[in-house]
Image 1: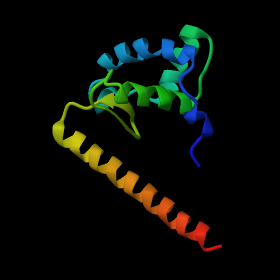
Image 2: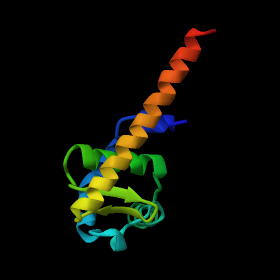
Image 3: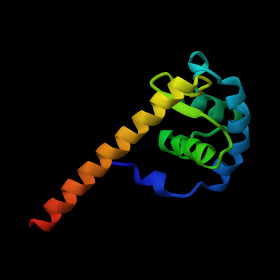
Length: 117
């Protein structure tokens, strides 16, 4: 189940991380330069003395993507990075679309089951 924490809007501290995150992704171009959540968490802890949790990092990443602050920002098992290869970006987009379709299919079935009580 999706972490309910992700539905909360960015708080002031998280908003203050937008610019540093945006700047940092200039150094994370290409899969070989991916940055993991653990690395991000260590950086936040070292610089600010706190941790915000993985779901909140995802929320900030989502904000960076959807607001257009960081173009072509993707995620893989290697971490987050800016993808420069068009074909790899197309594959990532296709994967997102497949995931969205699968999630919608489950929601549709559960709606049917809800009505079949």
